[in-house]
Image (cartoon, rainbow, N blue to C red; front, side, top):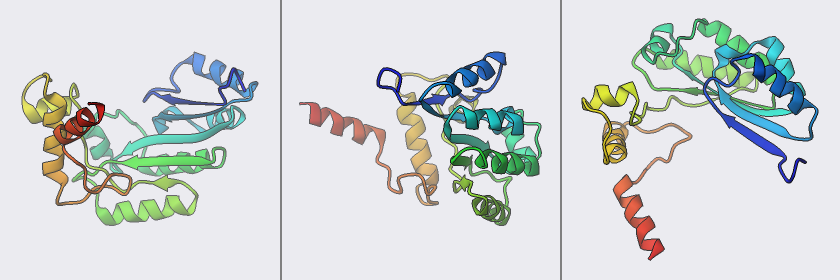
Length: 196
């Protein structure tokens, strides 16, 4: 343990890019600490999964978003891998890392039967695959500007959250989401009431 720290979790879509990451992982491997992270699967390969295993990586979460190249292109992922190669990499990662999670976004480009078959294939190999989650128009994202036609302001989060709830409330949410989420204004008022 390093000063009471025995686990570090990195949240960075591009964790894995650059020469310093390899050095960081080699140094982590020498220490009694475990790591987990969120990243893109297309930044890793079989050789770097080996290094992650030596660095005591116990959790790898990656956004696959869509099972089609067209769907990934719509989200500007700039992923040059095929869906089959993504599956191969996830399975290879799972052979070195105890928890590998692939997250999907609900898109019109993905056939539900194709998604189900892909999930079944990966789950059989020990990779957890989410049900497709509806896309959230995060303030500051291109989707936010496209949806609302304006840059974010003081009510951007409330606007985006309300839109999300209205759009997907009757269609259901992913298995990893609250099935009856409350509006942000209600949550903010609850928090204020608790502070008083």
